[in-house]
Length: 163
Image 1 (cartoon, rainbow, N blue to C red):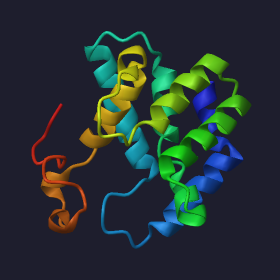
Image 2 (image 1 turned 180 degrees about the vertical axis):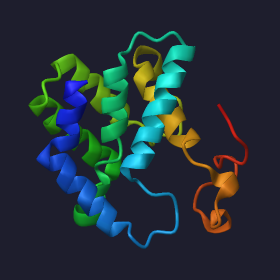
Image 3 (image 1 turned 90 degrees about the horizontal axis):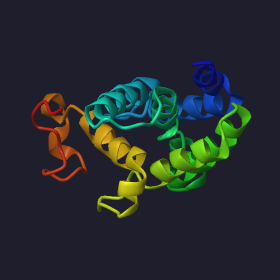
Image 4 (image 1 turned 45 degrees about the vertical axis):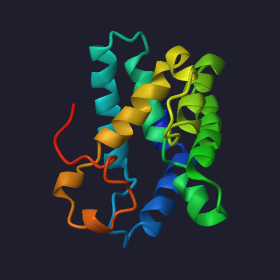
């Protein structure tokens, strides 16, 4: 998984994760650390196996590692994080040797991972669906000390262990 290490060591990845870390230092709600991204990756991989998807493990991990990176742009430039994440993902993935098709799949999934509605493209791009599912499932609202004041709606919160 050489390309994943290239992502992790890419200057834009490092710079963005540092901005996120600094801006979320005092955050009381769910954060967007590398731990979160790896949780999302592992859940995505489980979902892909359960659904007999043909997407590679490496592409799943790349998608998860990059899906919230645009938080840095949201905090510093006011750009929505899904749009910023897709932009950063494209630049980083190009430098790390991913194909145009791989980049397209990942950036489409990232661009839409906050959309609360099911979109018809999810059938064509299952990476999009499992990113949304895993991003939600990675949160453990049932053990959160500030769940009562969280902006997530009650029906979106994970109040039990779900798989």
